[in-house]
Image (cartoon, rainbow, N blue to C red):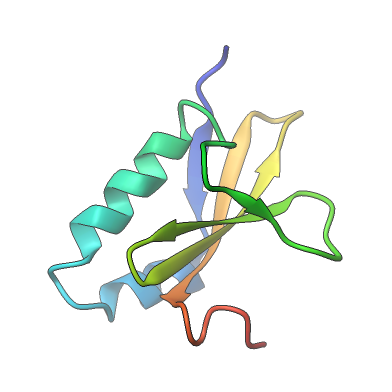
Length: 87
């Protein structure tokens, strides 16, 4: 199985930088684990999309898109669970 490359959208990086310093390592660890396999236990496919998923990391949700042909995972959004699905 190939290792996926992780790519962060600039907006997702800004969101992570605004978070509490205590939760950032947990989020980074969760994202790095996605490189070994983009569909770990607990991942949920978002409705109305073709390749967008979300995974929990404590009270935060990591929204990401999987590009199988390019072996790439793009982190789209990292937000608290109460704000994660608002546009």
